[in-house]
Image (cartoon, rainbow, N blue to C red; front, side, top):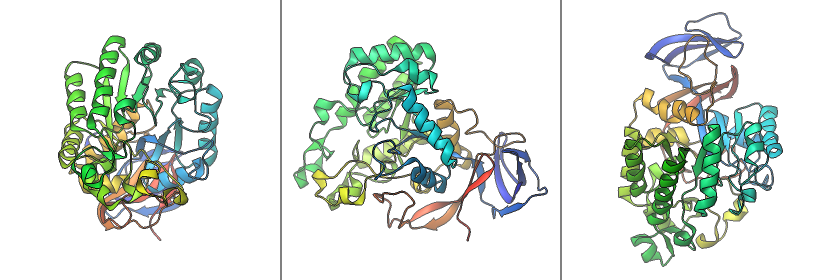
Length: 416
């Protein structure tokens, strides 16, 4: 049994200053009790463990960048108790046995719940539908060709119709390939000054607008991944007002940085969608506060150090984020504790249908928890991830994960 003392516990009725005791993988009671392990939260928040809708664990096929064990270790350090692993692996997760492999590896590691997403198309090539029936039978509920958008509208319509009938979610990497082709950063004044080919916001907005029309036709639950542009925010807001079943996510780095950071030519600021303007950043922050954007997702994208030791245009796209996400969001956006955990835990769990995750704390609730102090400042320098490509390295952040508990077991603690 584990007892947590001096905690500000986030219950269904709001924050409560109390102790709590965990036993048999559940919250035993909201009071101190007999325990073999005692943790002093020191007044920090104790809430549902964070849930990441969008991360790249790279296994199978790219284990030199990350694998499920190292990614799970990084996730636990970031306060996560569940992560949705993207299917752009090698081979792509387009069949049931591959999805079961990822889930089984997650259970074997045992640090977080690893939930496989399934590809929409075979090999993520955009030509034919993946084995959606097998993926559903393997427990997959979120489908995406992340890393690429599905350009063929007719094929995507068929996928939406199939997934809608079975209650799943289509999640889109919204990037029109024609408009995005050859771009390395946001198309704007910084790209013009640097002489680097830009990637316009319209590449994202055009695909989202098309997909929302298809979602209205098919009735599917549609999720917009890593929103970066204020035009996309407006599209999502309008679709929600019209009653469409649409949700959206934003990354910590798109809440924290604008395209001026790319002027350093550091590969750690190369991500897709790219960092955009100050106005886009402000719109994303406001949308997260107001609920137009439903959740924060890391888009944790590890790349080995040698891959990034190249000129900016040749560097791979994507950055790591599991270990810094909560602190980065807490630093960038003013969110009250309950709203912070809604965006980081509760709503992401609802979107991907994880019944044992994202639950406000009460007697009998699953002991998937994080202890998070929003007032501690720190500077990340090294990471548990195999890869170190973080835009937050050397940046002062506010808010620190003190401990993570998965199924009632302590999977990470920052105390010495």
